[in-house]
Image 1 (cartoon, rainbow, N blue to C red):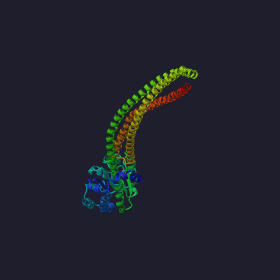
Image 2: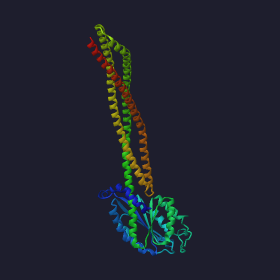
Image 3: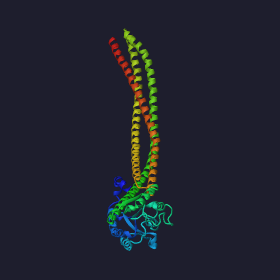
Image 4: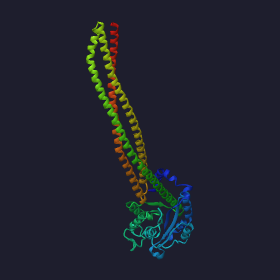
Length: 479
């Protein structure tokens, strides 16, 4: 599992974790890592016991170089078999002193064991229950060359307790692995030979059912222990570092979200009020357009009344010959010009009101654009926060299962729900903006229609006035 996901973790968390490296982190409070060996200390294991003692200095030094923000606490459990009585289970609780750890391992003797099978599960359970596990990252590195008692874990004939020791619980591995799961202990089994293959398979199968990852590392000789331990610690510490980076990112997103929730609430309130104000102004502009419509209708009625006698007047003016009749015709033509000019002035006054309405609507349209951009910018920020949260969901989804992962997943889902609620709150605001924008467009359209109507009417009136001017010129010549 770890090898499979490490490269993905490296890509996903590179930016988030880089800030935890270097001098500043080294100078800050270090987080401890609980690392314990569970070692089969029967007669065949002397070389491995010695190797553990020799390797520990390099292991601690490498950790300090790679992950200065973490500090190892070292523990050890030595197990043998039931025939070894008081030496069956021994342990060193967690210490931070390398020299203290070395001193303990140095006094361990590879002896005892009796048959081929050993009290493996007793040793693992002793490691779980007797050591004071209290760090966030907990690693138990199990070095073994023999399986536990009970045929369900091996196929060897050398087992004094083929059905398990009388004090062993039924399905002993399930009991031990559940306790490991409860304490969030990562188990890595160093497989020294094939006699433990069946045990590892049983462990892994049950581990899957309870979401406990069990790592397996094949070791051919004692000299390979150092590399195996360093790889396990590197990968697990890297993952822990990534969890911390994600937790920090969640805290940052939470802060952004809380700040933005206040801003978003204020924005919705201010925007809704702004829309009400704009809507009121648009209504006034619309009322002005309606008033213009009435003015235009009245002017048109006056014009229609004048046009009905226009042809008669024109015919009369063209037929008169005597000076007295010509003077009378000139008077009537001039009066008609005055009346048509008044109609034209009514149209011009109406157009002036329309221009004012156009100006007001243009201003409101500009205010709408500003409001829409503000809401659009806010929406973009919400989308950015949502994308950050979705990215965190992806990262957490690729993490190894743990209580911290479960809590992170819950926290992030809550943040996503909160962002979605903000989007829902926007719906009413967007609907209001759209409604007011439609009101503006409708008022614009009506104003444009009235303006076109006025322009056409004025064109017709001005044509008549030009005809009357020409008629007056003719009358003057005849006079």
